[in-house]
Amino acid sequence: MAERPVDLKIESRNVGMTPRWKTEIEKRVAALETDKIHLTHARVTLTKNAHHKKGADNAEALVVVTLPRRRTVTARKESKTFEEAIRAAFAAVEHELEKIEEKRLARSAKAAARKVAQSALQVEL
Image 1 (cartoon, helix red, strand yellow):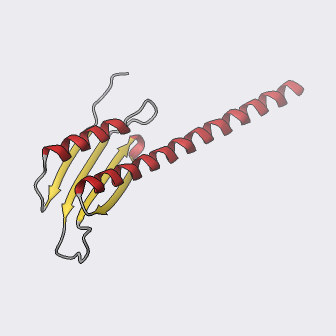
Image 2 (cartoon, rainbow, N blue to C red):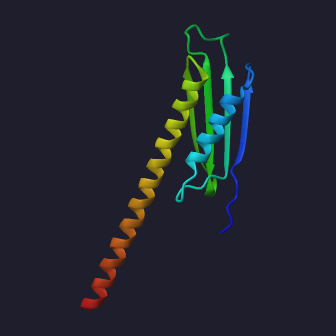
Image 3 (cartoon, helix red, strand yellow):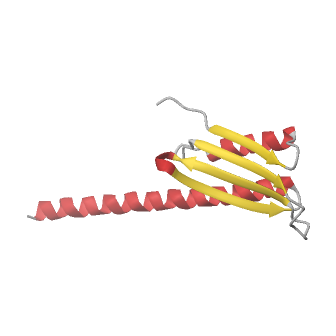
């Protein structure tokens, strides 16, 4: 099967995109792609919104990842700096992808156990 690159969109609102943020985002999206998890699309939006925020957490990172079969994982994190917000958002996405993989493995193990039970039942008959 041919490897297709992830369709990655990076945008910023009310703040200029720095090359350091862009390379970190690209590196983290590439790290999400594993042998078992294949991404079809990823969108990262960095927003600075000091207008409605009273606290210091006005740097926001939104990460939306699309998997096959139109399954999406979204994480929005706010922090003092964009680096911290990017790290927190990608950590949340990684956690959700791990949960999806655990559920998939549990379903396949359950199906395998059911298949073994059915074949054992047929042997007895």
